[in-house]
Figure (cartoon, rainbow, N blue to C red):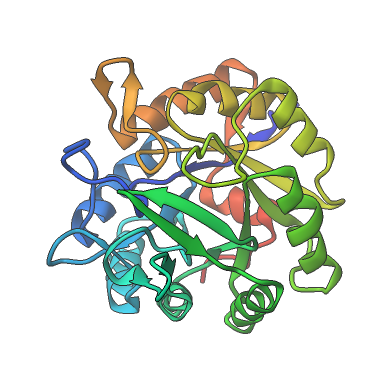
Length: 297
């Protein structure tokens, strides 16, 4: 009898951390591509990509940077490419409003899906207030903007990865989008827990994750991500609930207390757990089949 297949996603960079926090963080296209290839060889089948500026390593959604990353990675392996439309909390992504608050620029966000090669893109369908570096940063994704993002993805043949941080996100924001026909099953929903910097986001606990899984739409498959020390227990619990998993330095800079992580070590540990629980890491081809993506040409 074949073992159930689990998609292991690596999120190598993110749009928030920097090399001062962990020098193992890859930030430029070549080092991201090299690190992604090592994670692919360790068992990752999807890479969740964030772009950084060459000048100062701060966040961008510049399609030229994404194009370079996508091409460098694709030249090495067939891992599924998932580009961010969230960007990050500095660099090209933010501007200050007249009232003193900051905002992530929506016009910059949509550039993340313009790079050739993107098979998936993150779609955060909710409005968030994020607190970073003494700034309160609004991430307003209204129903109209959600519709715009989803329609742009659909026109490009890109599958949305719906990121959710609370029960409300699942029931109201993603539920509304699905009812409007903005995605086709299977719906890929990434449950992200423990983002303390996001107003309204939920921490990880077994009861909270169980509750969120129980309220997923029909025909949805789910992935579990969690921040910092919550990453290991939340992803392991996600496996037991029948989900897929994400690890990487975007979410967690430490392997254990006092020891800085690498993306490869986090993937290797997750793959060991997947196998110890009687599952098998999905190949990129299998991951595409599970998520309903087109085969790689």
